[in-house]
Image 1 (cartoon, rainbow, N blue to C red):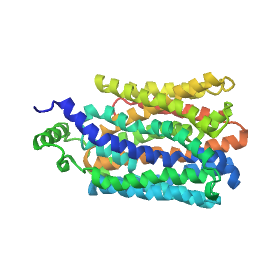
Image 2: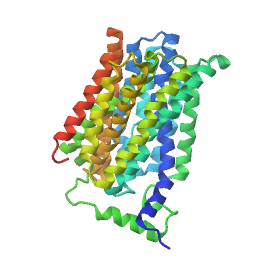
Image 3: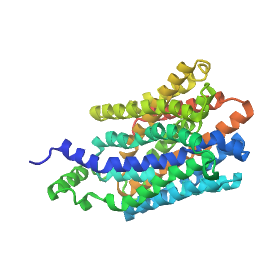
Image 4: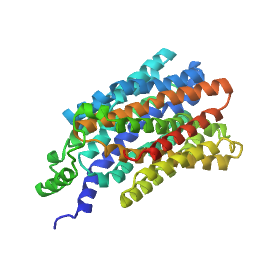
Length: 419
């Protein structure tokens, strides 16, 4: 008996999303585990908060420079080889961070890690457009993007445990073991991608001819003749640049949380790397649930704009409220949880707006443009927060800066009549 449409897309989702999810968990963990390494790495190497902020952020310079070429390569050569190349390279580079001894070495390795990973997240967003029509895209994008908070749910306690229990083993510090052990799964999954991924619907031997035809027809039915389809079109359309500005604002909030939440949790009074890791995981666990629920509601009602604006504003409120509540641990943690839910829901919903703008090669360049430009705030944010913490002695000014950025992103989305 033939599968109905929901059953067929569920089959596609079960085939693709768990593996892509696992890949992104590893990718994201290797990108942000420096936030936990910071707890002991800075003292061990004599780095200042500003050095850390610059090193955490310079990752995104490499990411920015190589993102569009990487996404165009995926569109031309396929996801299988592109994702395998990215994952193996970044795993090896992340592991190499254990040998850092100077700020310059730290900066260079973080830059190279960004260059290696460039194209992964926008590549997956592009890859999903090869399989799902727009009406089903928010939900599946949210399922994949829950890897962002769940990487922290998994990685925060794991990183704390590694820092505590591997410190001094075979002459290596805990932060060195953290970089090494958390990099190995990335390399292994990169090799698995060569066997497990199909570049397009036509390559999927696990589907029948009739099922491949139905999936292809669903994509072809929504192709618009007026939508930009060439690579340069994705770079010169004003609406794409507007979404790049929106994403810049939202990513500022995301990476502020990822790189600094362990420090904020410590400042709330928690001690011990494992305890900090467990508490840090709570806001991200709540955010993973919120992302799926908001995306499902958005797909059901066919509405994207306010499903982006409202979470962004809630994220700003949560982040800002955590500052005056800093002396009340439970309330401050609740505020940070609201902030994390808002930031991550706004991020994932913004992709539903972006992917509706372009198709074909223009989708490859346009999606990469939005992600690469947006992720430049991953450079600006950590560096600015590190500088503010060094100059003011506290994290409050930096957190308020993140909240203001979320308000700006919400305002940009709300003002657009046509995206």
